[in-house]
Image 1: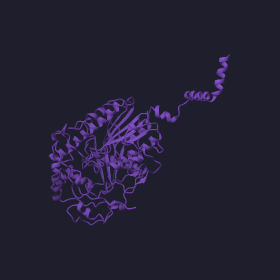
Image 2 (image 1 turned 90 degrees about the vertical axis):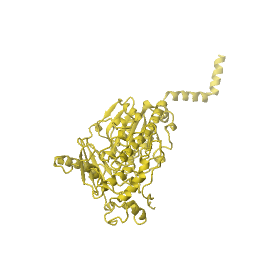
Image 3 (image 1 turned 90 degrees about the horizontal axis):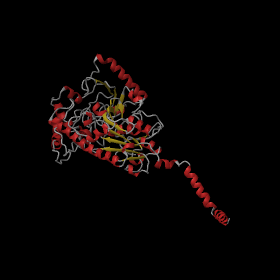
Image 4 (image 1 turned 45 degrees about the vertical axis):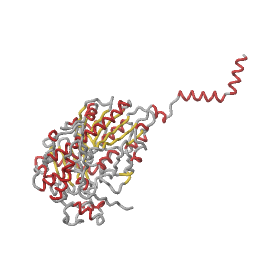
Length: 533
């Protein structure tokens, strides 16, 4: 009895402590707060999106000759390699704007490369990283480049303020994007595995000279260097025990940086490598021939993260029936820097139609970036002016374009035989034009080309100098090139000036794998006139 009395007295004195302990015990038996769940019990997959710049499916797993990319090849063997993957635009800022949102760049007003008057996203659309962040994902951009044509456009505004998935909370799923930029015409040689020019295969629309072959091989060697960087990143996933619960996407932002690739709607400009690995969800070793788009990645990762976007995306889940049953993919090109031009394309598995909205302009009108970055442009311009190109090669150097280009991809994989005027293809052309117009009208709300954009009658009839480059440099204060673009005089250099450019390129392009020769500057590099507020 005395012991019981002492216990009763102790409880009365410490009743608050007893009640507090009881509350803790009851709480431990109840539901964990949602914030704690996201920190420790969120089993949604991590997402790693790897992008390389300016690169077509020129990889050994895609059958490209001469190159050796074992790390990307291994990734492909562990998941799905898409054979018919396409971006929505053939240049970085527009294609990246589309991929950051899941919508075609024209629909969101982000279709002009190097936009000088960026606007917020319309229609209630939010960037993909923001949707994932709101859903509890840790988001990070592990490289510097965003390159958006809308606002907000900085790394800090689009992603969480961090550079690595290691900064997330314990157990929190991450969405990480990283870009490897070496293939963006840095094109360093690979001393570990140099590529002999006799081992490469050129498309027939490029001149087959030692100079062109060496430039092509240099690009493949740079991709080998990038492949090792990718291998190190994938090894880190394995080492940290993250690989089994991480969806990995590997993709190019658009096609290869060659004169008939980047900036144009041929497959060389819009067909890209795309690989997806998702352990436990995707059977390894698959090769897929569906028509897929870069935008489909957005739909796939949002579905995997159980996120419903506020506006239905243009892309579709790669694992769904809508992609399997897709008949067409579409792409658009508008201005590139201050080079004004506009094109739209529709592609099925068997045919490609390109609608040139400004056929009066040459394909190779003046573009400062290309003239300072593409050695083959100098080589083939010389050959064109001398009459040394084949008809398939010379067509791209013509002073005007056909309004419609149609290619039978079953017979003509390199898109060099335009059959738009062939009566045998009249029904195909009619169908593709109708489908393209429907897409322009009802999907992207295409604004077309304004009279100001065409800039007809704005410039003198002829260039008074030996290069367009020189005229542009001397007229920076006289014209608002941001608004009306550069003049489209063609050719952009005389034969003598192209020869000077080619001579500057020679030691750089033909350098050995161990030589350190800087890339030359071609022409007059000028700062663009910026818009004043």
